[in-house]
Image (cartoon, rainbow, N blue to C red; front, side):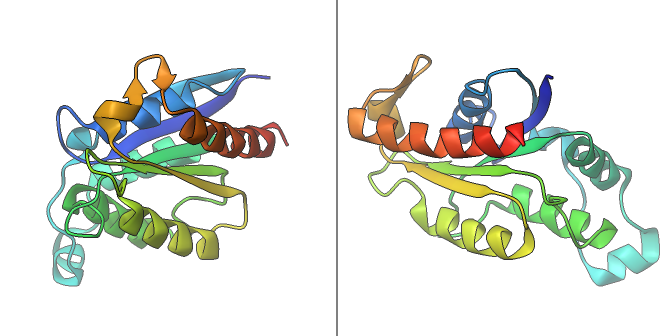
Length: 179
């Protein structure tokens, strides 16, 4: 049976390396269809309690949540902005949490992060992994790819050690999706 995966880079950059990594990763799962989302298609006013009380939850937040509901699994690759989530991702996450506290609906998740630098956006990845593992009872695996331009091509991860680590996480994610 074909599984549905939603994948996105948690960035609003038009040339997002995180979107590239998320899409590549999701397409490595056998017997799956991939729906790659672009956060620019879900740009909304900045979340605030006052705004929610005045105008309600934006239709785009509901549309993004529907994409999550319709998926069997989720792949996210995080851009790191000053050690944390990009504003584009955080805003969507905040709005979705107002629709339903269980934002990711206990679906298997593969969390990734990459950057041009040697640390591979590990700070934001560790933060997201910690939070999402506490709120998701399903499998949540993670992988950081440092030095994106040196370690990645359209064919995959060039560094053998990193590729082995990636495949181990991918296998865990794929197994969770098969259950």
